[in-house]
Length: 245
Ligand code: TMP
Image 1 (tube, rainbow, N blue to C red):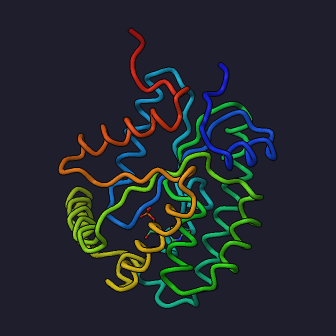
Image 2: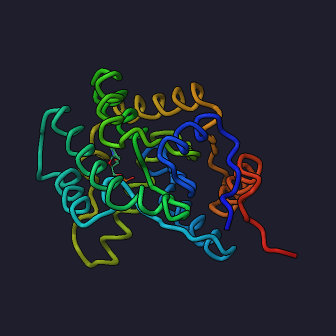
């Protein structure tokens, strides 16, 4: 299979530097924007259309990453310095990139990653207030310079997003019959923090319009997904998103 064309100058540079053949798509957005659901739906759709797809996430993606994710999100971890927090996300990333993402891209797969380097800039940079340059340098080291070809930014008002998190957490704790329906360590960082995160994402999208694809939430999940697929079809015309006639 030849790789579908991605209409992005940045993607050409980073793809040739890693000599990879696949496509790297990241999903970003404030907490509660619905990226995990949309990433899964996109992976299923591309799989049905014959693409080889790897769906992964940060923090997480590997057994090591999933363990460190628990530490990062567990409210019992308590306060750790912003730099310590950033380094934990970056350590997950370094291992994830070298052990899973780059090998999958080299074998021509489409890698869909639920959050990547932009999340560190949004949360630890804009949100926590670490200098953007520090976050960028650590992102560059941890990812070996790998950048997504396309970043799908699902936008939601940060208050609506947190309300959605509360509802989701309550639903999943009912399913698991556990009593913990509360927000995780990052979700509970406060309304002002989440407003800064959202602003950060919107600034990043404005600064790199070729890579970012901004998707505003529609009234229903199906409408948002349809909107996302329409935009993706324009951005990446070679991707098979509709069934062959
Ligand atoms: P998730 O809820 O999207 O799975 O992500 C877990 C949390 O981790 C979410 O609140 C965003 C946060 N996060 C960071 O703060 N920095 C990062 O670099 C990443 C990847 C996620």
